Length: 565
Image (cartoon, rainbow, N blue to C red; front, side):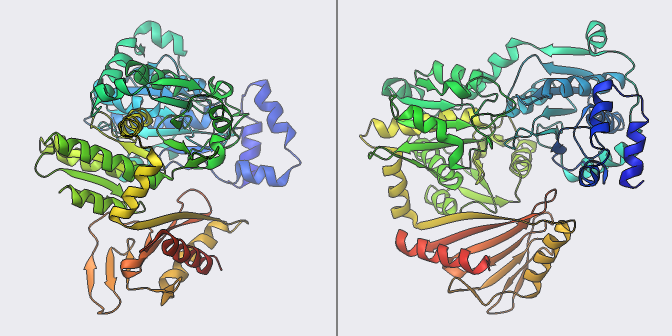
C-alpha cells in the first residue's frame, strides 16, 4: 500500500472518536500523511521508537499491540519460559502501552508481571532475571524529547534483544493484521491471574543488590556528602533516594524536575549527555550545599554529573570522563582490598575512550572493546556466567553516559552508577580533593585523551541514502591524514577487516559485523564513523591524544574541522 491507501485503511477502521478526529485533521496535509503513513514503524534489535500519534509509522496502542503480539508469537515458538515482565517510564501513554503489551502476552497464555508504578529500565532487566522470564519489555524512549515513546525488548538473560530473535519478531509482526480487538481487558486478565503486579519485595531486593555493589559504603556514610539531584522528570526519583538515603548522602532535589512529566517542560531534551539537561540543577546548586550535581535520564539507565569549579560555576564531565573515573575508582579500591580476581575483565564500547584501556592495564585487568550497545557488554557477562565466572566482571561503560557494576542486570544502570559517583566524591572529599582534581590527576598519569562526538543530521526524502553514501565515500576515499595526524590504519567493522596502511597487512576483527568505520592515527588518536540504524544521521567519534591538554585540544579541533567540511 502507498501512504494514501494506508491512511484510508485507518480512516475506515473501527477506531475511537478521538483517533478518527486526529486522522481527519491531517487529511489535507500531504507531508504529515507521508510522515505518518509512508511506512510501518520498524522493529529492530532495540525494539521500536517513534513519535506518538495515529498512523502506521507512529507509536500508538495499535502499533504497540502488534509489536507485543509479535513478541508473544516469538516466545511461544521457543523453549523459553512462557513468562514476561514489563516496566514503563514517565512518558505520555507509557502505562497504557505497558498494559496493552500485558494483554497481548496474556492472550497468548504468557504469565506476565507488570511494575505497579514507574520503574527504571535496569529494574526491568533485573526483574526478567529474578522472575525467570523468557522476555521483557520497557515502555520508554530513553532520553528523547517528549513527543517520543518506545518499546524496548529484552531476552531471558536481561539483555536487550539480539539480532536473531529480533528478526523473528519482525517476521511475526508482518503477519499480524492491524486492529485485532483485545479478547479481554487488562483487569479481566489480572482477575484470572495471568497478569500480576510486581510487588514491593522485588523493589527491596533490587535495592539490596545494588547496595551490595558498593565498594566502601562505610566511608561514604562518614563523608557528609552533599549532592544536588535531578531525575529529569523521570523514574529515578524513588530508587536514587532509596539507595543514597540508606548510605547517608545528603540530597537536595531539583523540585521542578522531581515529579514525572511527559512534556519535560523544564528540560525539552532530557538527555544527560547535554549540558543543557542540567540547567535547572545549576540554579539550585548555586544556593544549596553541593559537592556534586547528579542527573539521571527519564528511564534512569544513564547518569551524568557536574562539579563546582570553585569560581561560582560548574564543570560537566563527559560520559567518557565519568566512565574512566569510575573505572579507576573501582579498580583502585578493589586493588587496595586485594579483591581483584585472576582473569578479571572490564568492558567498553569501541566508541568509548581508549584511555580506559590504560587504566585497566595499570591494575592488571583486561579491557574488552565491543560494538556499541549495552547488550554487547551484557553478552560478555553472559559468556562469563556460562562458565561460572561472572565474578570476574569488574565494570562496563559506554561513552553515552551508561555504566554498570555487577551482574544483577544486563543493561546500564544509573542507580548503581549514582552510588559509585557518591563513593568516588566522598573518598576524594575525605582527602581534601574533588572530582576535578582527580580527573586532572588521571589525565596526567595516563595521558591526555580528549574526546568529542559529532552528530551529522541529514535531511530530505533521501536522507537515509545520503547517510549510506557518506559511509561508502569514506570507505572509498580514506584520507591520508586527519587534523595533521597521519592515518596509519583502518578498521572496517562491516567487512570485519583491520588494515595496517604502512604494511598492507590485514587482520580479522572478531566482532559481529556492523556498519562502522575507524581511522587510526597511530598514537595520536582515532576517528570512528557510525550511521544510525533508525535515523538519518551519521555520528563521528573523535579521540585526540597529546602530551599536554592544550596539544590534544588543538589536534581535536583540527580533526573535527577537517571532517566537517
